[in-house]
Image (cartoon, rainbow, N blue to C red; front, side, top):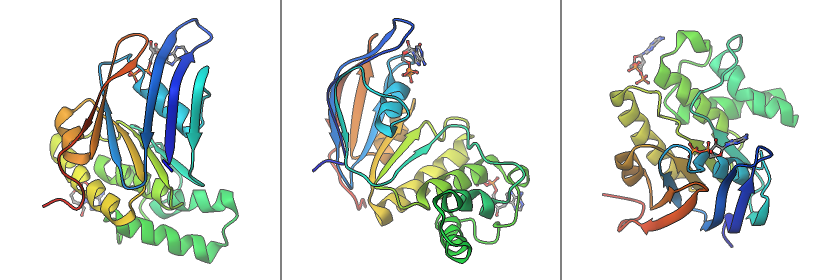
Length: 218
Ligand code: ADP
Ligand code: ADP
């Protein structure tokens, strides 16, 4: 069964805007699907529907995942908390005992290459490192579905390339189902096993391209 499945989904906002029309797709475990298309074609709306932050107006959407994580373009870290405490927040809300959530947070920070930075506060970290904390916070709950809304869009080119390599490594290790919005075709091609091309208003999927390689890559 796919982790995420949409069948003929429509999204209408209260303002009268139809943001999506006739959107059908599925994403399974081990698939990294990028979504590209011009501004306003409904990419973010699609991701918000997949995350449960918003509901469909027509058609069906099914999620087969106990945990879904969302990574935004803005890392949205709590400035008064250390990197470690930012990542622990998820466990705190879920009632995970302190020792256990501490261990999990350190492991997640280590996964994104932040060993030794646990006690630093967001403002002491570079843009790339803040994004790493944000990714660690998303992955600490071991999601089956991970949704990324242009996470590397605000980073400089070098940091962006580093983050792409890192995310790919983590994905190969954890093998969740991923949906990743980007404005960069090269980023989509580098990261994904599939690229969805969206276009129009309302937004539709105009192409669904299976890339001719699969993980692990040479
Ligand atoms: P993209 O992410 O591809 O730039 P969006 O999903 O943000 O596109 O937006 C798709 C369309 O839906 C746009 O016309 C946008 O103005 C509209 N839209 C998005 N969110 C809302 C909202 N909360 N209320 C009304 N219209 C919205
Ligand atoms: P990134 O590419 O993750 O944004 P930078 O290129 O800014 O990282 O930094 C490269 C390296 O410099 C980091 O991996 C880290 O070891 C070190 N570094 C960056 N910012 C800090 C900081 N605030 N305190 C200590 N070391 C830092």
